[in-house]
Length: 345
Image (cartoon, rainbow, N blue to C red; front, side, top):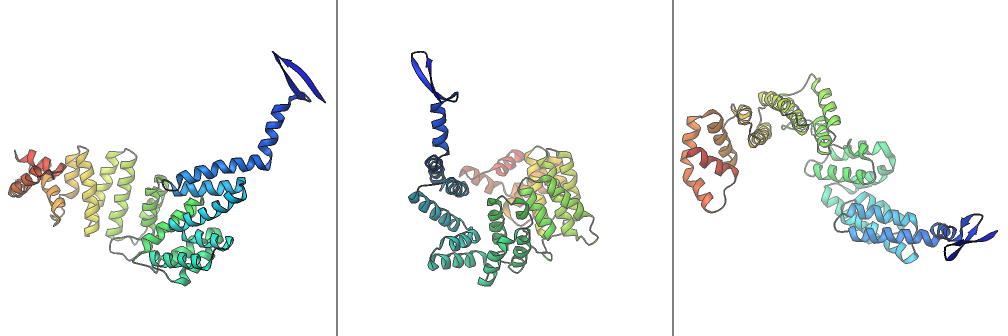
């Protein structure tokens, strides 16, 4: 029953006590036209994000398709998703999506060619990855078996597959994709690679748990042990626990016998030095051989003079004074050059 009620100078129509305008609004919102309007808003948002944030654009186009779109916008959104996948190296999603929408053979062939070139894999490998994608939790195992055979482009392939899984909200599966190089002289074994990935994603707890578990292994090489301790130091530094970070870095330095380990610790030393911890910085690299690379050598000399008043290092730094002054004159001097000139005054 429709009733009329006075509302100031006007009238409000009510149906069963509910304002008719409110009911009309609900009907419009719930109608196909209302849903399509919502989808159109998502379409416009996706369009504005294509260049600045293609992943967000993909998500918004997909949400627009789920919300409902007029036929012309629906067709456009479908192809937008397809080409955004393709353009941003989401080759597995692009290929599977292309099959579902009936994309032409030339488009699909181009996706496969691009994937083979970028990832350095065979067509058989690509088809294995496409088929395994729907396998859920087993996909990382297939991916890792493909990655293990590819030394030159393994890191690119692993990174792209992680991104693809993260786009689908499967970060747990992404974290299981690793570059398996257990025999690498740089100590880049699967567990350390995975811990490094956890760290890069901000999962410090996951990284630390894996590292402590790894530390109990009986067959850890000196290189792997140095890298493990170095990663623990990085985690502590991220947690603002500088004292513990320095302790782990010192332990790592004791096992650093290869060039890569020394390079990582030299970078850690530099960060400590910039933070005013010159004694701790010097202690990390004191026993390392003087590097050949110019800037690294300059850093070693600067910190040796500053922290230990090492006269031999000061003589070497003095022999470089003319070259350093020239860099200053040309405006090419950085922190190290300026610090060296201060120490030589």
